[in-house]
Amino acid sequence: MNRDEILCTCMDITKGEVEDAIKNKKLKSVRQVQDETEAGTVCGACVDDIFLLLEEINGSVEE
Ligand code: FES
Image 1: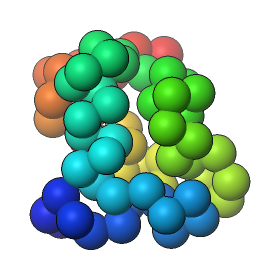
Image 2: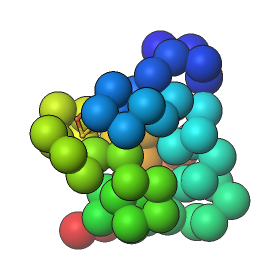
Image 3: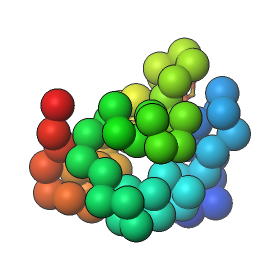
């Protein structure tokens, strides 16, 4: 998935937007990403992708 691809179709949020939020705001959990970006707050189908992105950037994911 590249940065311009939509990660959360419900909220129309790209992978790059989520990536930047995780890096710039030092987000550690799926919940924090949901609160900051609203990605993953509707159907939940993209939650696994958010989790993987957190893991890729931070090396781990907090509850
Ligand atoms: S695709 Fe992200 S909440 Fe539905």
